[in-house]
Length: 76
Image (cartoon, rainbow, N blue to C red; front, side, top):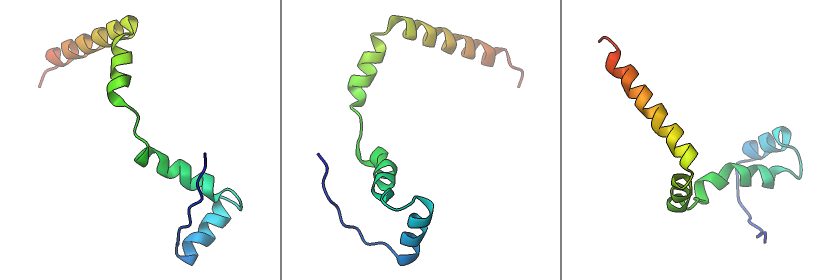
């Protein structure tokens, strides 16, 4: 469901939005820009689901071990 929101911006900002984004596209632009800051995914659930992926976990462990071995062999 969508909700209507009225915001106030400087005229110069509005003109820039209108020219850059285009008429009738400003709402979508603002929503896409703001969404990552206000809609947070359930990180605990996401991590739990990733941990259940045995192939992914094995690849991640292999990558981490290889990286640490490479670092250990670098000369400082």
